[in-house]
Picture 1 (spheres, rainbow, N blue to C red):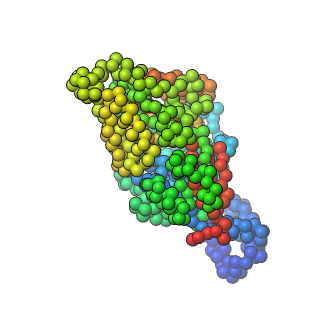
Picture 2: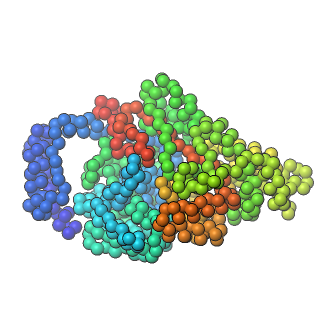
Picture 3: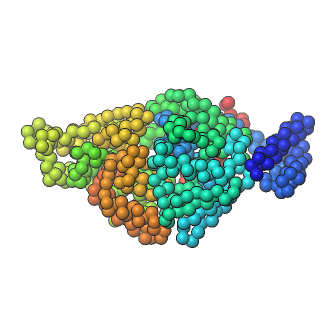
Length: 575
């Protein structure tokens, strides 16, 4: 079937080119052109799988007025890879992940307003009553940017690649431990069989980027792991270039099977310094940036600034949060009393007001306040230096020699906080932590690293404490971070947290399809984390953006913005 489809598409494209050459591009002739293509499809295939409808002169003119232009987006760090299977950071996810489906696409996607799943590469699906069988039927008229059709074999290859333990994808693979097999029924139909029910099974496979087998097939897993550039997918953008240290360029996919994007190019410009990014925005070198809280408060009421730029602030219900984590491999942090003391020493209200400009909300755990998964009875530990000193003393940490530093069994309480360099928010927060810890006899040094080095050390567990953010989903499965099986290499339990009760709760929650029962389990889990403080959970933060007002069509949905809706009017295009 694939061969016939490819031959057929070749002749359709050939006839289109001949017609365009002979008839010119006058819009008045579009009716006859589309009619002849439709007739050709019916003759060759017996049916028309894709209906070509002529656009009116007005529609074509409007589309032409929106089409083109470059969108230049600032990224504060450079992603280590553009391989969607081995990527582990939010920057790569923006470019090649399921967040936007720019280069690679998924079987389904969430509607940004209703939050319900809608077809993307799949046209329909069936889930058995017991949740142990999921069948997807692919659309007929979908293909990768190189013209090869997307088939069930590509879906199966994607799944089997993730399940290959030699592939550096443990962070994704943990979500598939309850999957048993993937079967290709035919070119358009694929079936997933489960060992046991998993409440997120449909979303996990449905929102996994599908990679083309003919491009990514490998004999040696290390070849796949080292494939970090030149991505090929089915999305509305194709990879253009990667100038290391400067930018990544995506270009409009002229061979896209669906409704395309307006921009000719989407450029991700790497600018780590926030002041330099703001200067670049004002001078027109970039179009979009996420400002610092202080930049937001400085410009949100500036009429002069808003003459050229739009400002957006919105909160997505995606269980995302910032945190300070304590590595259990470090002897200092193995005591629950010590970890509780450290949290009591952190004045989160001060950090919220003076560093985040009041834009964030203090959280007590890994679930967004208001989420059904969040335990409403669990409150953040209060700022209480006196309680902290009491707990430290109970844990055996005293200043025995009067030098102002607590010690125990001959060891002083000193540690390093690993941070990402160049982030003013993180650097300012680290200063506050250092000062507040010192007042209780604890010495903390700040250990900054560039993003790629930071990630490498994080994955190797080569740190004592660190601070970072986690990007979740509408309904989240915390197994990836908190189950002890994820301590192993490649997993996301970076702090080596181990609790048998938590393991049992997370395993049972995965198998519990009843929402109310499952959320009660997560409430227990939330309470345990609050008692043990393996992380000091910090804030739920909003998304904030400064954007050149040349960009039109921007709408904030429940799940944020959709770049596919944006455009630059032809008269405002610079490139």
